[in-house]
Image (cartoon, rainbow, N blue to C red; front, side, top):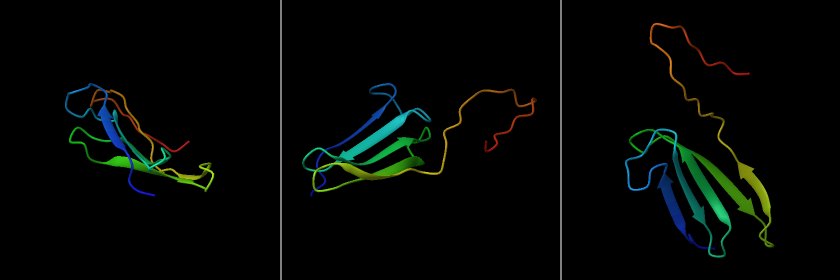
Length: 86
């Protein structure tokens, strides 16, 4: 299997990357998704990667997921705020 098709996008087409709103996908020659990336910062870095594995019948057999979560919000710097693991 080869690298097939790839694509990437941002929340606003033709614009600069938006933090947390980026995605990229890669596919093999017959259209199975092999990997994906999402999230990111305003420079297009720090994307979280997932990897998909399929069997000979093109059935998804495994998907790896990053152990990270996207957290977005707004708060005044004078207010206390924290993010905790549930």
